[in-house]
Length: 232
Image 1 (cartoon, one colour):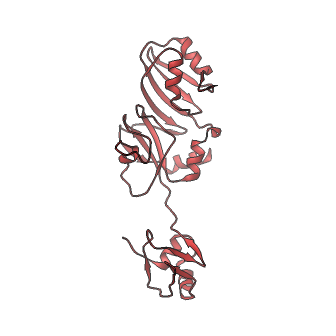
Image 2 (spheres, helix red, strand yellow):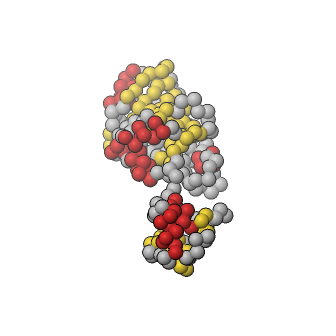
Image 3 (cartoon, one colour):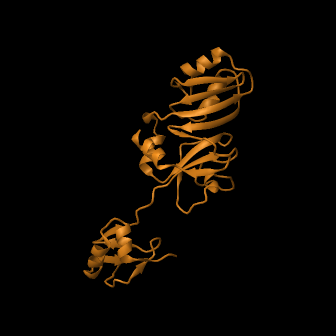
């Protein structure tokens, strides 16, 4: 339990300056747990005390967190999955963050996590056309015709996929860039051409590359990366 002076709490919540907060306290305009507080030395627990200013709840402004994680195989992209390994187990911070989009259990690579609701919505919604690039290995050699079909779009889950950028890496490996993210989309597309995915790694989301992050490691996004994400 970390206690905070009431006027500092009001300031950190964006209600007013500390000096103005002192005036509001002395004027009896602040309640803590339903009781009017007028003493300037009063402290509150931001996590458990209910603070109100003129009858309206006051909460601390949350620091916005932006994280890039190299998701290992076997982890679920979820905030709560009893008895199973989830990606949040890999993030050792006090703040609560949420995965942006999904990577299935058997896939690896870049996953973004944030507590910024507006950016989460922006990156998750298909109408914003954020690119996602994947490195794909398959069981059997893939022909040029197969790559052309993947690029042009295939009918899965009742409708055709959007055109995609596809680049060959070897006879059993290629990279594909999507602007959508349907359930197990790449695996379903590869099955549609009569093949099977053996390894699937996401290597980029919008302007954020996986880079040199090792499996299971994470890092905070840079200010420039965050700025460019929000510009989109």
